[in-house]
Length: 230
Image (cartoon, rainbow, N blue to C red; front, side, top):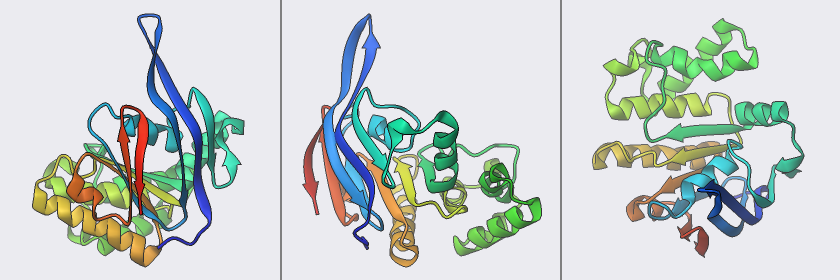
């Protein structure tokens, strides 16, 4: 449920890449705001620009031009250390391929962002155990990723993303590597996090069924924002 406070403000966002010495436009003047507590999908086919948009929103890439404000701060004015700090403390990422470290247990994977912040290992592991228990993964916390199913790995990835209580959770095709039943469980989990914890959730997807379960839907095509359906 939205609280009305602007968290993400995007104004005339462009992103070009250079191919063969010529600019290739990917985003072509995208504008929208997302308020704290919203559950939003960004839907579009491959090549629509949605993943490029997520990388910019997650401070992993820079726009070619246009303005992006996160939490009221103009991102262009932030130094690289400041951007890294915002990514670590205020943004959680969930990816289609999970991106778990294969030699670490589930609890160690989840605790990692807190250790990067400087938390004591005992405190980080305790918090990781609590989050994993909340996601019904307590009995699997000592297992390595190769010992977990795809759905279980995605739950661990979500636990890692939310362990530091981020302001926003960015999920890029989070159900793309899962079967429909397990994928629905993951979407149900996002809905619960949004409803119960007030987490702002932005889901990048090409799946209309996933998009329809979000309270707001942004539709992209060819680098343009075609629709904003509330």
